[in-house]
Amino acid sequence: MDPRIDKLLKLPKKQKIALLVVIVAVEAVALYWGLYLPRQKELQELRAKLDSVQAEVQEKQKIASNLPKLKKEYQQLQKDLESALTELPNQKEIPTLLTSITSVGKNAGLDFLLFKPRAEVPRDFYADVPVDISVSGSFLGVANFFTAVGNLPRIVNITDVSFADIKTSGGRTTVKVNCLATTFRFLDKKETKDEKKK
Image (cartoon, rainbow, N blue to C red; front, side):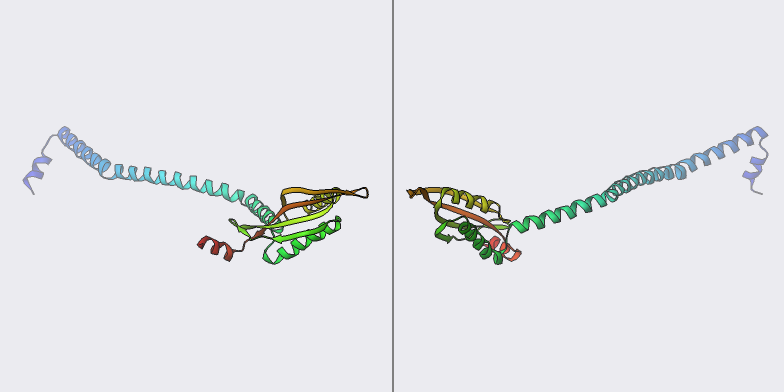
């Protein structure tokens, strides 16, 4: 047998126990520093990741629980957009709208002296469609015309109103009115792109 092992075996019992305690303590410290502490660190990192993932899951669940509400809001916005687009005619509908304006004027008892469309003025997603108008008729007819234009399903603004040639004949007062009627037209995607290129 090895003389060192013999020497250890011949030690008194108390020294053997003390030596065993020291060896176990060294192994315990080595296990603690070598295995336990790195695993604890890894466990803390995993717990932090878990907390982060759980927070993200809760946030996603909140969004998911709001999804029906958001879908309803989206559908309402789509309806509002469709409604707004009905008030902005496209290129094909402009002649019909201008015809409606003249019909409204004639129904109000006015004579059209001038009806001259100007060049369109492009904006972001729409274009101004201005029309110089000159009409002749009674004050009441002019007021009815402006009211009827305001009640059209499309947006038409009347600006630059001026009164001239106020005449009274046979108990009836007539007036000549010059104004600018501006309606708006929705630009399609191609027109918007072309305008941006300019």
